[in-house]
Length: 70
Image (tube, rainbow, N blue to C red; front, side, top):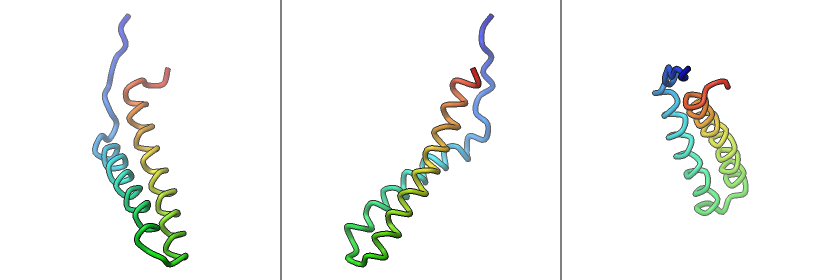
């Protein structure tokens, strides 16, 4: 018996998480190189952390849509 593919749930949200998460990771990496301020450097690191979580969640939705539960 073949597997049934129902596609992706909310593909727009999935692609937005992946795209904008990756974009803000890049922005977060650029902040420590641009600024000499220590507080802004830590804010940049926080931006990297939070946006990496969003990117990983988007990739998890993508992987789940491809493979499914089993």
